[in-house]
Amino acid sequence: MNQSIDLDAAQAAFLAFGGSIIVLDGFQYVPHRQRRDDEVIRAAPVKAEDPRVVKRLSLLAEIRKMAKTMTCQQVHEATGYSRQALFRAAREGNFVFRREERKSPGVDKREVQRQIQRNQKRIEELKLVERICAMRDIGLNRAQVAKQVNIAYATLTAIIERNSIDFPKVRTRK
Image 1 (cartoon, rainbow, N blue to C red):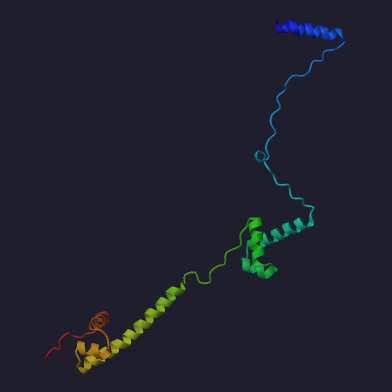
Image 2 (image 1 turned 45 degrees about the horizontal axis):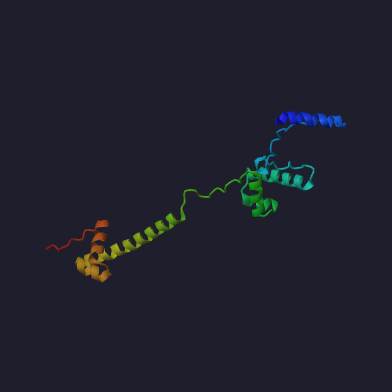
């Protein structure tokens, strides 16, 4: 049999017994609820009424003002706050302290030490030059002078050339 004829017969029998037909709403699409990680999670705005927050903001403003003209050490000495607290405040307030200026920007301690050592070596060499000249005037040759001064012959030759000493290799006859 045909289904629509059976449905009509069933409907007529239902109405004959006193039933009423109610038309229900059909399916309606409801979109899925957004997941929490898809939502933009915003921090709750800071309430200015909280006295601790007000105090912290005023502290940050004070330190920021001092940081424009002072180093962290100077702010530490002026306010008494620890350096760690000052650096934390700088990070939270997004500012930096003034850098400490060097007292003598062109002076390098290592270079000064090297210069002192070079000067000391030069002084010792000049004392050695005096001894070499004195032994030359006595009549000693280069090998004897090197042995007396207890230096190598090549070192003696280098000292002679550096200081332009007139010290012949072979004694000239008179």
